[in-house]
Length: 328
Ligand code: ATP
Image (cartoon, rainbow, N blue to C red; front, side):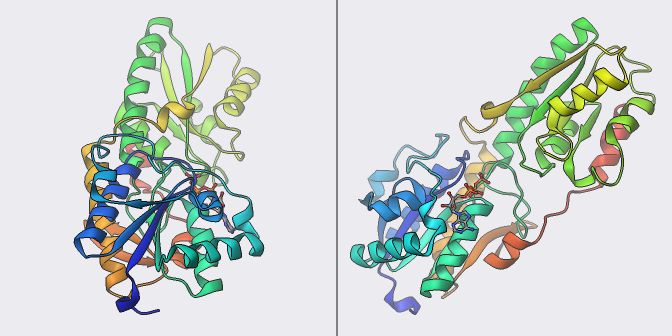
């Protein structure tokens, strides 16, 4: 299908919700309408695509949402979309609704599904990276990451009051699903003593290094950010090790959990989502297919789905040094 035949696009959000998804939905919708393309909002991700929870979107449908967290389109996990039969149903629904191309907003799983679907049916899809984890290759940041990072910083600031008052060692678990971006950057932003992240779990014993490198020499309380991970066991796993191996410490665990997902998006996330939403429509008009919109050095880039999904995005190792040096 070439660009001249795109008269109507569908838009959906899928996987975990992330602040800024609404700003992206707004931008995609308005930029499409600006270019005389019809827009259909698809509810509950791939699930609503299969069941046909679809509504015509006008510019008013996305009024007053730029400042709201979550996603007005709702989101869902969808087992059926993982099967060829489920995807065929989705394709039939798109034909029935007259939707010529899709814009999907989500994380790694969402883009994996999009890639498989696009190949199977030779169907044009553009993806936007919407996840607080920041774990997509080919883009410096993802929509929702900055807001989550700020939330983590504020939470750690509050926990520090208690940590300091009681001379305690706190392990604070943050999200990331095997990616240390939130933990590492959160540690720098909140002035934590260390970050324990899965990316370097195989290289060295981060807990032993932290405790043995003069940790708490000059301080009575400490805060360590831990990325959720099966490799390290997350904050619980690390705290249990401390109780066994360093029993003199008074240890506490806080798991920030879903606190990190919600809230009004930061200016940075709103601007990122707005630019990426416009870029998604530009990409479709430019005959780009099966790419994720990324941002590198403040420039919009097109990243093939295969690259965005398959490659692991590296952490910035300078930040490991920053945490170590600044926690003296
Ligand atoms: P987050 O990173 O915030 O969790 P995500 O997009 O990675 O978001 P997932 O639950 O992994 O969230 O994926 C969302 C949906 O994408 C799944 O529920 C499923 O419908 C679809 N999906 C994921 N992986 C595949 C796959 N291999 N084949 C087909 N569809 C998939």
